Length: 169
Image 1 (cartoon, one colour):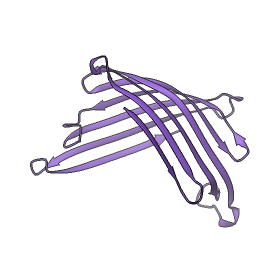
Image 2: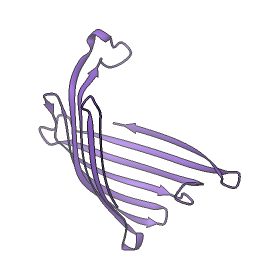
Image 3: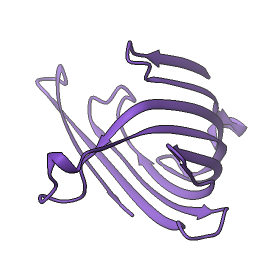
Image 4: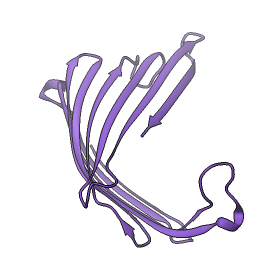
């Protein structure tokens, strides 16, 4: 699978991404993918943190995000995929720049029937470590949990889909 896309706006915001994926290697037991993306947000506004933020405290900055990396996984059971990846991630906010090495691991359970999701579920847990390659001051960890459940109704002509997502850093 090869995916390439780009998007832009009249206010000069833009994003691009290229992805190469091999989801069915070794008879469907192994997957691999490589991703590269670049995003440019020239004028972002920030008012401060929390409900006490005031409009007069507004500041503006530009934001540029670049990332390149790869991940792979092994299907240890028909519905269970386990894997890991490594990415170079570089956010630039106006004059402030941090270069990260992001290492991650994931567990994915997928028992949708059929894969177009008339019933079943898809659950994924990603755990990442963002290591500041400059001086270590901004190193942190993050966990993302994405839960999707599908219920077919009326001979599966209708589907109710529920989704929950949470992220913690």
